[in-house]
Amino acid sequence: MNIQSLLNEKVSTAMVAAGAPEGTPAAVRQSAKPQFGDYQANGVMGAAKSSDLTHVNLPKRFWMHSNSVR
Image 1: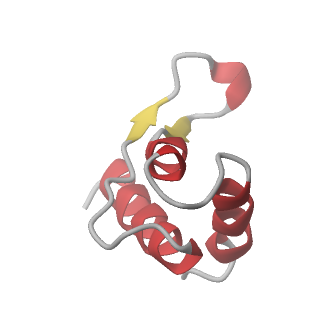
Image 2 (image 1 turned 90 degrees about the vertical axis):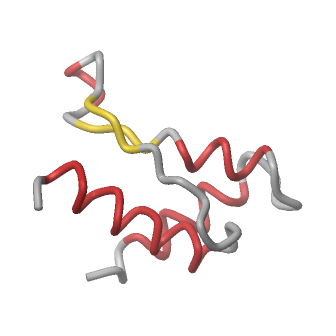
Image 3 (image 1 turned 135 degrees about the horizontal axis):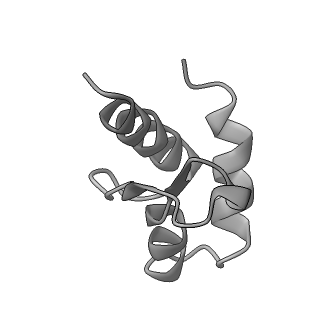
């Protein structure tokens, strides 16, 4: 398993724990701008836009749950 696959799995788990629908893609990609980190999870904002949660609340909830996913 490569790092991008592992990140996709972990981000997907945290997204579901935060309230995103099961099966929502994490869409982890390598970042185009190194100053923002090595990878980015584009699926978090996409899930927020398509759910009942606001574009601010789901990412906040995701961040809280991402620290508990091992």
